[in-house]
Amino acid sequence: MNHYKLSISEINKLFKDKKLKPSELYSEVFERAANTESIIHGHLTLFQDENIKKAADADKRYENGTELGILDGIPIAIKDNINIAGYATTCSSQMLSNYISPYDATVITKLKDEGVMFTGKTNLDEFAMGSSTENSAFGPTKNPWDPSRVPGGSSGGSAAVVSAGSAIASLGSDTGGSIRQPASFCGVVGFKPTYGTVSRFGLVAFASSLDQIGPITNNVEDSKILFNSMKGFDPFDATSGKESKTKQPKLKNAKIGIIKELMEDGISEDAKLEVQKVAKLLESQGHEIVEVSLPLTKMSISIYYLIAPAECSANLSRFDGVRYGNRVAGNTSYEMMENTRAEGFGPEVKKRILLGTYALSAGYYDAFYGQALKARAMMKKEFTETYKEVDYLISPTTPSDPFKFGEKSDNQLEMYMSDLCTIPANLVGMPAISIPTGLSSNGLPLSVQIMSPANTDNTLLEFSQKLESVVSFTSLPEIKGDVS
Image (cartoon, rainbow, N blue to C red; front, side, top):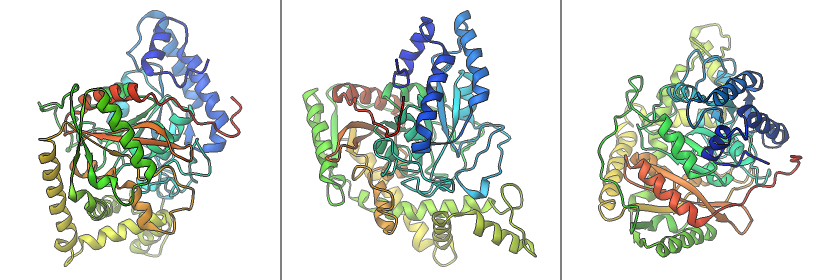
């Protein structure tokens, strides 16, 4: 029996009933990786040897009835911009190809306390900047549904390994859709929590006011389990917030708004039809569907590509060859830093650093970065007012199904537009989830995105579980060359 597509709670029950051991599950998952990694290249590193002992320890805990909780013995993959002590954290960049982390990210500490086994580190667009995982210094990850197509990005490796079955779940980071977009492309669930609910301590920063760690899973229940195991205030993260009492949206007879601007030009017919299909299913469950207009969502790409590169420019200034990471020699310290950054960063990262530095420069700050911050504040207000009228918002997760490698490389705007539907949730700071709901006319995964007000994460997850059960998406990828 293939256990890698069972839910975490189902696996935990098998462990407790002594019908399956953590070591047996790990062996199964690692064998799956051996069959699929040569095709999809989802993991950059696999932690095989150390997990053999950890799995044996988990076996003993279940035998003795001293298990650490529902996640004890579960193999989870970690995006390679999240620090695990003693292991490389490369961010898929030559700049950090020799960097070994001396500490654990807060989310890693919490998962270790629950007995999680980490399958390894997963591939990503360099420093999480991209929508296709084509920007990795260590080669692209391929989509398990069709290796000629991208898995999305930047958490492409994290989504691909869950889809392929070489991890039960994974962690990704989401700055403008980097959990939800690849989850949609790979036919799995991706959840971006409310900004500040999950600590970012130990996540290599891209854009600090937008970045958020979250889970990629086979089902919504697993996302809920992982979110609740990781959330909580962290004194090491200045942006971490304590749980606040917020009015929760309805679970029954809810009012759901279809975002008008995310059902217009730039959205494929397949993606529109998928939202309409899901809307009818929701109506059949007693929910009310209305159309809502959020005009500023049309500006979200422009706002994002001023704020995110500006913050990236500041955050990546620390990678200079002086303190850690790679260093390229030069006759002077200035020449050394120039050579290090020229060789260490890839084209997409350089492009965003230059754009951000320009937006922050004297004479341009107010005209570009300052205006983007004002527009972001207006967008937050627009969403806040809309949530007074509806409980949830629904849209496509992505404008289309997965595109082919190289298809958008020569058209940067078209590449950036692939995050059109996901960026607003990051700018506003609200929770958002991508749920696979069907297949496109190409036979590839399509998803819908559900959003709710800030700090209503568990209600959104509970609502999404109900939707997931009605949709009943059960399709799996057939990986060519897979011999398992």
